[in-house]
Image 1 (spheres, rainbow, N blue to C red):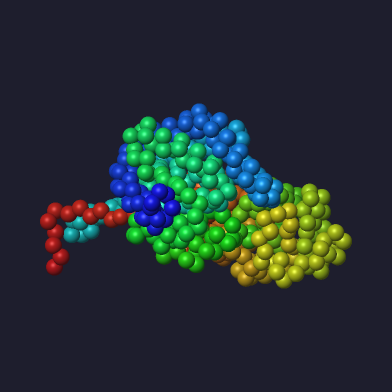
Image 2 (image 1 turned 90 degrees about the vertical axis):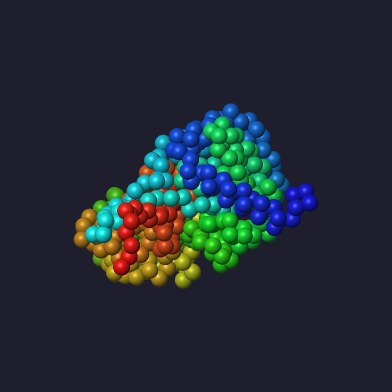
Length: 423
């Protein structure tokens, strides 16, 4: 509770304030939104000491709980990460404003003129865990797309997120926009998440979860309003018989080892049996020599004694670690069948010099992102030219892939007439 207010009353108050702010943001001119974003970036730079002090409190609590090193790393802020956060807001300001864009126009024989126009979604709830930078990314993206944001960070990043929110709200003040355009749930009570999933009395239009499998699974199961999310990133690289070996080694290594804990990290390598003699052993060696554990089928184990046996569960596991599974397949059809059965419709790549095989893979693999001769680690809004992203969506309705400012809008039809009536 906050004061004498129950959590339900508190959350409904946040929702109503967000709804009122969303009305203002929907009509705010681009320059005013950009001024707010630039002021936010400046406030973060000027408040670096305060933010790092609050982050130190979170880190002290995390270490007292004996959190894993990878978790502590995600939680940690430093001067470089704060600068990246500020630059991220400036990059969002530089993006085209999607609000008001005319997507299509046409005139009917009766003289009615139709326009399909981008408009904000409304009030967006973002539920996230340990990464405090999500606070700035999510707040900035929602603002640029004309949406109000209600942020519920994890208890582990509570103090860091609060310090960042203060900078964002001061930026809103500077530009003359309501500070309730970006709000943070002011406590870490778990029942506040449940209240957000209910929709806050009809004031919340969309939920975006950013976190681990258990959080996303709960949101997907319990939400009564639309959700943008992905449950897992079980990403594949298929090395075709027509692949260039040097390219395949380079791409597979990057897809797995550039950052093992991101959702676009490759978890399975499929190798065409027709070229296994040429490709299998060198690709295994490239991964193991870089510190990656390889769990493979019988052929992979025979190719390199360092390969550990893969279990059936390995083909459906998101490791988020320096571990990868590997097996031989009989060409692109079996590769696509494996991906359809074990994948998560996130990101999958083919390495081949055969253009027709590549086009089949691109057309038939039913994932949000499908690549040819490129690393799965390009599953990132910045790499798509979207600026920052609020997450990756693997659903098929409205948004798919990186969710940036454009994906945080919907549209309306504006119809202009001159007195027409329908016969």
